[in-house]
Amino acid sequence: MLPRLIPTIGVVAGAVLLSVVIYFLIDAGTLRPCAPGQDALADRFQKAISALDSIVDLGLKLSTTLVGVGAAALIGFESKLKLSPSSRIFLLLSIFCFIQSAFYAILWRLSVAEFWLNGCLNLISEPLPARQFVAHAYFFFGGLFWLAVLLIGATIAARIADREDV
Image 1 (cartoon, rainbow, N blue to C red):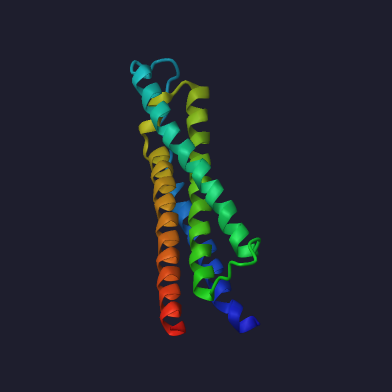
Image 2 (cartoon, rainbow, N blue to C red):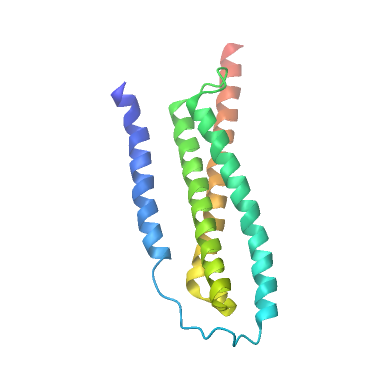
Protein backbone atom coordinates (compact mmCIF):
# COMPACT_ATOMS: atom_id res chain seq x y z
CA MET A 1 0.00 0.00 0.00
CA LEU A 2 2.76 2.43 0.94
CA PRO A 3 4.70 2.10 -2.36
CA ARG A 4 1.53 3.14 -4.24
CA LEU A 5 1.24 6.27 -2.10
CA ILE A 6 4.83 7.43 -2.59
CA PRO A 7 4.18 9.29 -5.89
CA THR A 8 1.09 10.97 -4.41
CA ILE A 9 2.95 11.96 -1.25
CA GLY A 10 5.81 13.30 -3.40
CA VAL A 11 3.41 15.40 -5.49
CA VAL A 12 1.71 16.80 -2.39
CA ALA A 13 5.02 17.58 -0.67
CA GLY A 14 6.40 19.18 -3.83
CA ALA A 15 3.23 21.24 -4.27
CA VAL A 16 3.37 22.50 -0.69
CA LEU A 17 7.05 23.43 -1.03
CA LEU A 18 6.40 25.17 -4.36
CA SER A 19 3.45 26.98 -2.81
CA VAL A 20 5.58 28.42 -0.02
CA VAL A 21 8.31 29.53 -2.43
CA ILE A 22 5.81 31.18 -4.78
CA TYR A 23 4.08 32.93 -1.88
CA PHE A 24 7.33 34.53 -0.72
CA LEU A 25 8.21 35.58 -4.28
CA ILE A 26 4.81 37.22 -4.78
CA ASP A 27 4.67 38.83 -1.34
CA ALA A 28 8.15 40.35 -1.69
CA GLY A 29 8.37 44.12 -1.73
CA THR A 30 6.51 46.99 -0.19
CA LEU A 31 4.01 49.58 -1.28
CA ARG A 32 4.98 53.21 -1.72
CA PRO A 33 3.55 55.72 0.75
CA CYS A 34 0.17 57.23 0.00
CA ALA A 35 -1.38 60.48 1.12
CA PRO A 36 -5.09 59.72 1.53
CA GLY A 37 -7.57 62.01 -0.15
CA GLN A 38 -5.15 63.39 -2.71
CA ASP A 39 -6.09 61.01 -5.49
CA ALA A 40 -6.99 63.06 -8.56
CA LEU A 41 -7.75 59.96 -10.64
CA ALA A 42 -9.99 58.19 -8.08
CA ASP A 43 -12.80 57.60 -10.59
CA ARG A 44 -10.46 55.86 -13.01
CA PHE A 45 -9.08 53.63 -10.27
CA GLN A 46 -12.59 52.81 -9.02
CA LYS A 47 -13.61 51.64 -12.50
CA ALA A 48 -10.44 49.58 -12.87
CA ILE A 49 -10.89 48.00 -9.45
CA SER A 50 -14.52 47.22 -10.25
CA ALA A 51 -13.59 45.49 -13.50
CA LEU A 52 -10.74 43.53 -11.93
CA ASP A 53 -12.88 42.58 -8.95
CA SER A 54 -15.53 41.04 -11.20
CA ILE A 55 -12.81 38.92 -12.83
CA VAL A 56 -11.47 37.85 -9.44
CA ASP A 57 -15.00 37.11 -8.22
CA LEU A 58 -15.68 34.79 -11.15
CA GLY A 59 -12.31 33.05 -10.77
CA LEU A 60 -12.84 32.63 -7.03
CA LYS A 61 -16.27 31.05 -7.51
CA LEU A 62 -15.06 28.71 -10.25
CA SER A 63 -11.94 27.74 -8.30
CA THR A 64 -13.80 26.84 -5.13
CA THR A 65 -16.41 24.88 -7.10
CA LEU A 66 -13.77 22.92 -9.00
CA VAL A 67 -11.85 22.20 -5.78
CA GLY A 68 -15.04 20.77 -4.27
CA VAL A 69 -15.77 18.61 -7.32
CA GLY A 70 -12.16 17.40 -7.44
CA ALA A 71 -12.14 16.58 -3.74
CA ALA A 72 -15.38 14.65 -4.13
CA ALA A 73 -13.81 12.66 -6.98
CA LEU A 74 -10.70 11.93 -4.88
CA ILE A 75 -12.75 10.84 -1.89
CA GLY A 76 -14.83 8.66 -4.16
CA PHE A 77 -18.38 9.93 -3.74
CA GLU A 78 -19.25 8.46 -7.12
CA SER A 79 -18.63 4.72 -6.78
CA LYS A 80 -18.55 4.20 -10.57
CA LEU A 81 -15.62 6.60 -10.94
CA LYS A 82 -12.30 4.81 -10.56
CA LEU A 83 -9.17 6.92 -10.85
CA SER A 84 -5.81 5.51 -11.86
CA PRO A 85 -2.73 6.66 -9.91
CA SER A 86 -1.74 9.06 -12.71
CA SER A 87 -5.28 10.45 -12.84
CA ARG A 88 -5.18 11.03 -9.09
CA ILE A 89 -1.89 12.92 -9.44
CA PHE A 90 -3.26 15.11 -12.25
CA LEU A 91 -6.41 15.75 -10.21
CA LEU A 92 -4.30 16.66 -7.16
CA LEU A 93 -2.24 19.08 -9.25
CA SER A 94 -5.43 20.64 -10.60
CA ILE A 95 -6.91 20.99 -7.11
CA PHE A 96 -3.64 22.49 -5.86
CA CYS A 97 -3.70 25.12 -8.62
CA PHE A 98 -7.35 26.01 -7.96
CA ILE A 99 -6.69 26.35 -4.21
CA GLN A 100 -3.74 28.62 -4.93
CA SER A 101 -5.87 30.63 -7.35
CA ALA A 102 -8.52 31.15 -4.68
CA PHE A 103 -5.83 32.06 -2.12
CA TYR A 104 -4.32 34.78 -4.29
CA ALA A 105 -7.77 36.08 -5.22
CA ILE A 106 -8.51 36.53 -1.53
CA LEU A 107 -5.14 38.22 -0.95
CA TRP A 108 -5.83 40.59 -3.84
CA ARG A 109 -9.26 41.45 -2.42
CA LEU A 110 -7.72 42.09 1.00
CA SER A 111 -5.22 44.47 -0.60
CA VAL A 112 -8.00 46.30 -2.43
CA ALA A 113 -10.03 46.56 0.78
CA GLU A 114 -7.00 48.08 2.49
CA PHE A 115 -6.61 50.60 -0.34
CA TRP A 116 -10.28 51.59 -0.05
CA LEU A 117 -9.99 51.89 3.73
CA ASN A 118 -6.92 54.10 3.52
CA GLY A 119 -8.21 56.12 0.57
CA CYS A 120 -5.25 55.16 -1.58
CA LEU A 121 -6.78 53.64 -4.67
CA ASN A 122 -3.76 54.56 -6.76
CA LEU A 123 -1.81 51.77 -5.01
CA ILE A 124 -3.72 49.26 -7.13
CA SER A 125 -1.14 49.89 -9.85
CA GLU A 126 1.73 48.88 -7.54
CA PRO A 127 3.65 45.64 -8.22
CA LEU A 128 2.39 43.77 -5.11
CA PRO A 129 -1.34 43.73 -5.96
CA ALA A 130 -0.47 43.20 -9.62
CA ARG A 131 1.55 40.08 -8.72
CA GLN A 132 -1.35 38.82 -6.58
CA PHE A 133 -3.79 39.28 -9.45
CA VAL A 134 -1.46 37.64 -11.97
CA ALA A 135 -0.79 34.72 -9.60
CA HIS A 136 -4.55 34.22 -9.25
CA ALA A 137 -4.97 34.11 -13.03
CA TYR A 138 -1.95 31.89 -13.72
CA PHE A 139 -2.89 29.36 -11.05
CA PHE A 140 -6.44 29.28 -12.39
CA PHE A 141 -5.16 28.55 -15.88
CA GLY A 142 -2.74 26.01 -14.42
CA GLY A 143 -5.66 24.22 -12.80
CA LEU A 144 -7.50 24.18 -16.10
CA PHE A 145 -4.37 22.83 -17.80
CA TRP A 146 -4.00 19.90 -15.37
CA LEU A 147 -7.72 19.19 -15.64
CA ALA A 148 -7.37 19.08 -19.42
CA VAL A 149 -4.37 16.73 -19.11
CA LEU A 150 -6.47 14.49 -16.87
CA LEU A 151 -9.39 14.44 -19.30
CA ILE A 152 -7.20 13.82 -22.35
CA GLY A 153 -5.36 11.03 -20.56
CA ALA A 154 -8.61 9.42 -19.40
CA THR A 155 -10.04 9.63 -22.92
CA ILE A 156 -6.96 8.00 -24.45
CA ALA A 157 -6.94 5.29 -21.77
CA ALA A 158 -10.65 4.57 -22.39
CA ARG A 159 -10.06 4.27 -26.15
CA ILE A 160 -7.13 1.91 -25.61
CA ALA A 161 -9.26 -0.18 -23.24
CA ASP A 162 -12.08 -0.28 -25.81
CA ARG A 163 -9.69 -1.53 -28.51
CA GLU A 164 -8.33 -4.25 -26.23
CA ASP A 165 -11.87 -5.44 -25.44
CA VAL A 166 -12.60 -6.02 -29.12
